[in-house]
Structures are given as C-alpha cells and as structure tokens.
Length: 331
Image 1 (cartoon, rainbow, N blue to C red):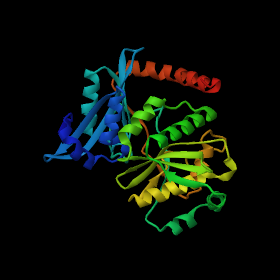
Image 2: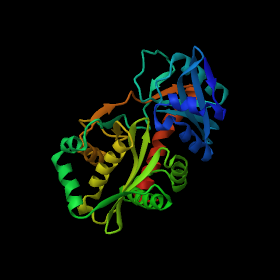
Image 3: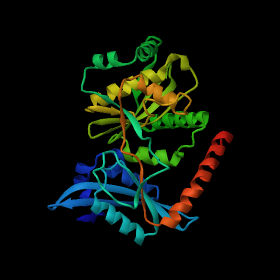
Image 4: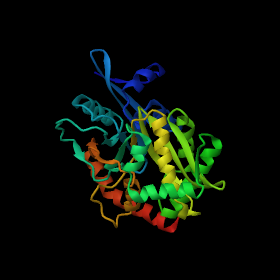
C-alpha cells in the first residue's frame, strides 16, 4: 500500500526509514519554506513503513505543466512507480526524475527511461572512517598529506562556526567561488533557508583561517552515521597556504567525532575521467583523500506526458546554453 504522508505525527517513523539528507524530513521542510510543493509517500507492508519517498514538484510556466524530482531514495518498486505515474497524470506532470542512491531491482517499466539530463553526478567518492586518524591520514596521497602539514606549519587553523557569523562567512566564500568558477549555483535565499532549517541538527560549518582571514569554508552534513560535503567555497587570498586541504581533513575528523562511519564527497567524475573536464580539478582534489569511487544507479525519467517530454527535451539544451552564457558574462 502507498500512503501520502501529511501529518507531523509521521516525522519520527519517516526519519527511521529515510536513507539520505535529501530524503530527510527537515529537507522537505526547507523546500516547503521556499514555496516548493512537496509530496511525501510511505510504502507500507504488513502495517509497517517499508520505504519512504520525498518528491519536490516544480512548475514549468511556459508549458503550464510541472515536473517532479525524487533524489537519493531507494529505487521505487513497481507499486510506487504506478502511484507516481497516476499522481503525475492527475497533477499535470510531464515526467518525474528519479535519481536513487541504491541499486534498482529488475524492474521493467516502459515509461521509465535513462535520463539524458541528470541533475546529480553519477559518481562520488566515499571514505571509510572506521579507522584511526593516523591510519586515515597515512592513507591519503603523499601530496595531500604534504599540503595538510604545510597548512598546519604555516599557522592555518580550522574552527567550527555553526552560527550566523559562520554562515555569512561561508556564503561570502561560496558565492565568490561561484563567480570565479563561472558556476551558476543556487541563490542566497536558498542557502539561507537550507542553513536555518538544517543547522546543528544536520548541517555544520567549518572555516579555515590564517591570521583571522577566512581562507575556505565548508558546510558539512551529518546524517545516519555518514558525513557529507555538499557545499564549499574558498578565497583567492593565500592559496599557497593550502587551507582547503587542511579544512577537508578537519571536516573528515569532525565527521568521525560526530559518529559518522563514512564520509561522502557528494559528487565526482569517474576514476577514468578526462583531465580536460571542467570537474577534473575538484575530482583530483577529492581523490587525494583516498576514498572509494562509487557509482550511483543513474538518473531516470518516469515519462507521464510523452509529447511534452519530447518538447521539454528539445528545449532543454537551449536552456543550458543560456546558463552558460550567463556564466561567461558573470551575470
């Protein structure tokens, strides 16, 4: 049985089954504060919740339609896919993008296709934290260890500042990095709502300083014994001090102290990536911490209105081109 969850009563049972921060109850609350429609579903078997699925619903005014997004859940069963399809039919959804964190079983559904426009990277790097700090440090690439020790020797320090001041420093460095890298990320309101909703319960901020000058800031999430690195930013000043290398090491240590058994770098290219790819730099940076490359199941689209899906797929590349132009012009 599939049940729509609306009551606050279901918060604790929901959290017991949610498998990722983007499926957490608090993440849904943050998205609702942004004015985004949320659909929460519970798959119930033998009167117990087996799996939970949290979708966001996004309007497409140009088409007078909507699209759905289901990130990092378990792969939906046939019953859940059927429910989602019927929900989409009743609510003018063109398709629902599904990007699970766990492998799918052998589900055959002609309406479910591999997406040509994934939102999440299909690879990540995950570090096993069930080792001593010295074992972790010794497992890193020699260059990474050298950079960490250089930062320490030069007087770089890292502090947790999970407060309003820390968020403002983080936001400044994050948006400076977006402008510098021509990255078209989320706006300030998005990050402020995410931080205010998730702070201290899931989200924490760590900042690297040199003589009271912020060099880099990371937002680290701790959820279900896993540390995550979803957002970060750095300054152009004192880049030779390798503050980001020390900050990542301290983020790993912080996650371990908070009870995490794994540290997920959130996104990466594949192990055999091209050195010319725009993500090659941060993939190489993360690789220095010797995590295991892990491939996600992929990105799938549950097609509900085939005509509009084809039209959307035709228009999508032009949207991407406009965003690239904006990045180049630094809008």
